[in-house]
Image (cartoon, rainbow, N blue to C red; front, side):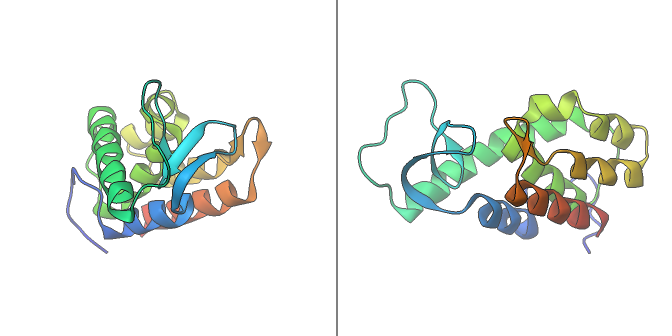
Length: 150
């Protein structure tokens, strides 16, 4: 377990969790709620186009760019000292749901109040897409909770 406090970038465990959870798709596809996506869960924004498949290197570059936004969102929201494992768990959570969901969550309120165990348990409540529980999200939230507590 890393004991580094206040990390600002996603570590190897967080990166591995995100890649495993998102999977790699080199062609455009619709995610679980119908949003156009490519690479490792990169949501295609209006005006952004991809002709044909992308390379793994392009997917990695998109992931790094998206992670920079994720990491910035975490840095702005978290007001307490956290370990690398906690940061990595939050990175997976925010990468999947967005920083806005973190900012308005009970998870963040508990974390910023110093209730680390309570915050960890909040991950498990976020396993729905389009209002429906998804097995993949349940597995991801369990992995995030485990990493957060490591």
